[in-house]
Image (cartoon, rainbow, N blue to C red):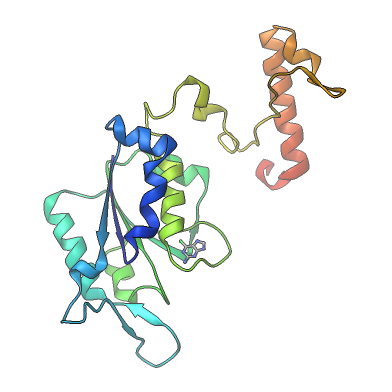
Length: 224
Ligand code: 6GU
């Protein structure tokens, strides 16, 4: 997979990609992430990328021309499966959307900023709009990093057996069951007997029950 991220703040984005699982995915050659500073595609001598909105109102809007220049350059180099715009009014990210996106080859992710981008960018270039939840961030960068993390960890070969995505919370619309590690008894708090029994079919059944119980208690909406 190749991901091209267009942003006015590349510095804000790079560190999550240089640690842990995302770093390993890059090292293994399973993903390439490229950052494009919108200012490098700015117009005029002032490196302008945003302007006041027509009709008045507070807040700046990212201009269409630098975004067009950047996207056009990328599209001339390869085909893209999706051009994703990160915006609080997009579709709320779910595991299902991440699963779907993880099957794509080449992605462009455009990060909104200030009041967002000129609507014509959304109308003409963008194929999908994603939000990471009902709260407002200063820009789309952290949301893009969240999206990339959730997608990259699903790419075949990124996770090993111990970190397998198959048993994650949300993967079957269920929360994950409780987990324990050593010691089996700590200050009078004991690990459920069954987990120490070695009876794996029974343990599996227990985990399914606990996952369902936890989901009923904390997120009954997932079961509907
Ligand atoms: Cl994608 N962008 C911004 N600015 N805020 C958000 C968001 C995105 N998702 C949730 N809040």
